[in-house]
Length: 455
Ligand code: ADP
Ligand code: MG
Image (cartoon, rainbow, N blue to C red; front, side, top):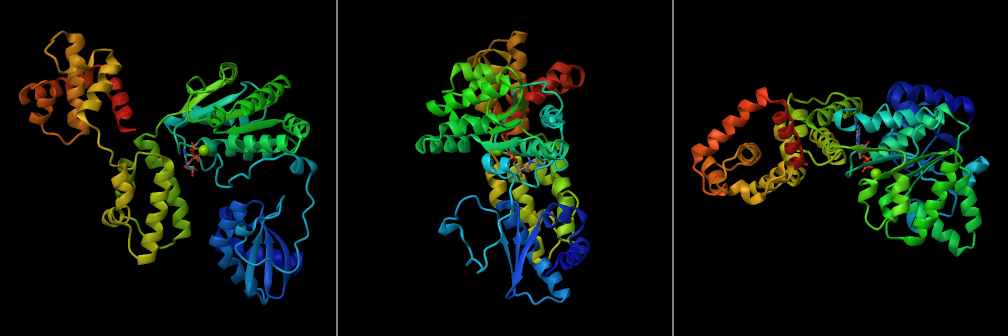
């Protein structure tokens, strides 16, 4: 098959899958062979191979046939740097080996992990909790003079650290195609390092890492406690910073809080800009759901969704974005299978397990503890009789939150606040409601505490 025929087929695919799908998934494919009824393509990464094969395999096959080719099936391959272990081969390999793509030297020498094509800035929804991290990532991605080094992103699971790092890499590839950008997890860093030690190629290893322009290491908490890896990481880090090369690091917590990480590394990591991704809030979750729903609408045309479903999900699934995405994916797949409109009932039925897991119960004791911590009063004073304002006010805040965040009745709440009467509890709640309208500090305290308790 010639370039022209593939070009023709691409034009047809562009119409059927839409522009954004086309540029993300089809355009990067390279047709490498077509013989004996098998059309073989090369995809840049494993992830893309799997995704394209699952989602666009049928369409490609159809268009090839429409173009008059006798094709039985399609094969997608990835340029491999090492032989594929047997258990990774899902299908028998085709007879004719694919002509190896000529690779740039840098590509061969620099071990990095493949980038997820979906993790772009365009696909990243910005809200209050991730605003700062996003802005910092954008700045680094501009590729101008290094302003903060390293950029240290931290936050809980599934809040978008990896997404932002990949987005930086994608952006840099466009803006500074000549720059050598390497992204890898701390685990891969260690693996490479150990391998280099074993094969006595430590000099090569050092040289390799010291020759990049931008180095990104994801989940750096992983190397805590792994002494020789830490040591090597530290030297690589220093060498790159000294050369004015940009470094971007992520971890699940702030540098100072990573246990078993050497002090000198901690302080080095804190030298640049440290920004955190906060737990999502309702608006951000809703925004993410809306964005992803748009994408799904293209994939499942004709599927209807009732009002309020996204709001319901944003309200109920508060753990992390990955779970939120998983819920939506399942919902669309399920609805299209059964051919029904997505309603609240359908969502509840299809997501029972996720909803139940997210239904973390906050206890009154937890509320009392967090509030006491926040206002720096003793936990025993929450329950005790003292009536000075500095104690009574936090106590009322805790009462208010107990009513808001648990299903306990007023008498039950009263009992846990040292056997107070339910009218006392009601009074406390009213007082706080009143203050929230007039006192910004109280309103902010409540907001913060609620977020802490719900995360
Ligand atoms: P982390 O590395 O912090 O554990 P990831 O970057 O892997 O989290 O994000 C988990 C999933 O949630 C990914 O699929 C990512 O695309 C998605 N995600 C996280 N934050 C956002 C966001 N603000 N907008 C869109 N998608 C997001
Ligand atoms: Mg991650």
